[in-house]
Image 1: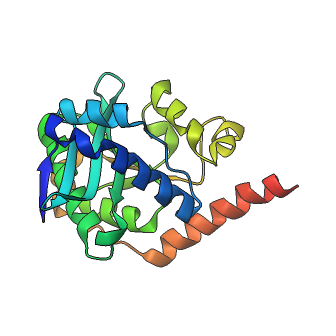
Image 2: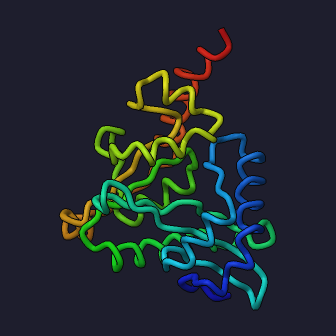
Image 3: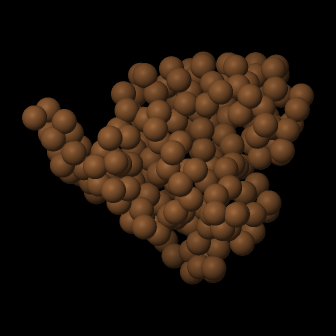
Amino acid sequence: MKIVIADKSHSIYAELICETIAEAAQVRGTGIAKRQPEYIITKMENGNAVIALEDDKFAGFCYIEAWGHGKFVANSGLIVHPDFRNQGLAKQIKQVIFEHSRTKFPDSKIFSITTGLAVMKMNSELGYKPVTFSELTDDQSFWKGCQTCKNFDVLTRTEQKMCLCTGMLYDPLKKEAAKTHNHKYDKKVWTRLKLIKQNMFLKKDKK
């Protein structure tokens, strides 16, 4: 297994990557922003993505998005092909894309919004901290990307202040403190937070 910075030569996998992301969103029943192959190819050509390959077989992918003129970046579209799940590959990809983001955008804050407990755990281990949406980018191009999410109406109802996703942020200015701080991940706490949000917002949809 190799995880490398993607380039133009990997564009042959773009359509499969989009299909894998779409299928994962359907299985989870949660929102994952849809992407087109052309968008994924652009990320590859710009050196803003990593891809995992087992020989020539696609195994996983993740890309970088920059917002607010580079003030914020996000590691998006993290996906592992079904044939390679439950092997710890997602964590490896997350580590590589995080390090690549820190190298390419050293002064940028790295943020994440997710409903996935596994992603929350990985983020915590990398030094991310939970934050309110107001601490994330105010670049509307980012939030428009949520329109393909099934929970977009929740984001709209709350005037973009909160959603079922949890916002998390890595601030490079606080990186020294992050290195010495023991970031503990309590699955019970995160699960309870997720359930509270679902009860707050999804019940309203049923009325």
